[in-house]
Amino acid sequence: MMRQVLAGMSFLLIAGLAVAEEPVADNPLVEGATWATIKDAIAGEVPLSDGSALLTVTAPYRANDAATVPVVIEQREAGTGPIQAIKLVIDENPAPLAAEIRFGPSMTPLKFETRVRVNQYSNIRVIADTPDGSYMTGRFVKASGGCSAPATKDPSAALAGMGEMRLRLFDAATPDQSGRREAQIMIRHPNYSGLQRDQITQLFIGAHFITELEVRQGEDLLFALEGGISISENPVFRFSYLDDGSPDFVVHAVDTEGNVFDRVLPKRPPA
Image (cartoon, rainbow, N blue to C red; front, side, top):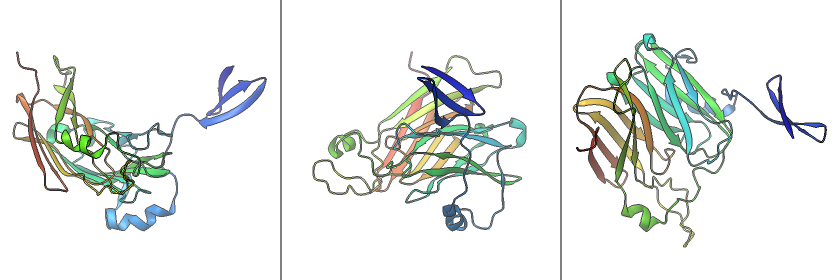
């Protein structure tokens, strides 16, 4: 068996026959009727310029798991000015606005990753707000069933560890030449969408998800998120930031049941 790539299309040569596979490379936004119906509710009358020169959005063309689709948002150049906030939109989800996120100055230039649920083939859009205006770009993702996919644990087990947090540091010993570091915070929470069933009773599990999240280093805000049902179970956030020398991340989260989770995560393990 041999693989060849011709004119942007991948082929498998099987017994002398060329069989077309999925297109390789890009998965840009596609035209669809849904955006026209939800645009005003999400973006209002704010003009949205093409954001492809400002930032990149990376998401798989065909997702391995519709309940945990990785989305990476990265500013192309530091000189383009700060991205102060974004809206993360999944057109075809029951609640298309997955999250609104504000960023502090230490997050510029922006590099931010999270995981989302995708309920059916959909555009994933990022609307970025800057001092110069608002910009939009995104990717089209083939995935289905993410909002109703069964949770990985039964409800009692999922609730038992709710609110636990873990921090992972990348290149923790030495920041890059700009003083930037990279970190990942995972929050244990079922983030139930309201569309999942208990695998024993087959009854729907009520929606129960994180609605507010703030991450700071010392008193300095890194990002503040307002989330909905489209953020994945056990939310994960990976981000690049300018280290201000403070010893800890301070995380504050609130969910739909009114539970409050406050954690201090040391940037370096104790000696």
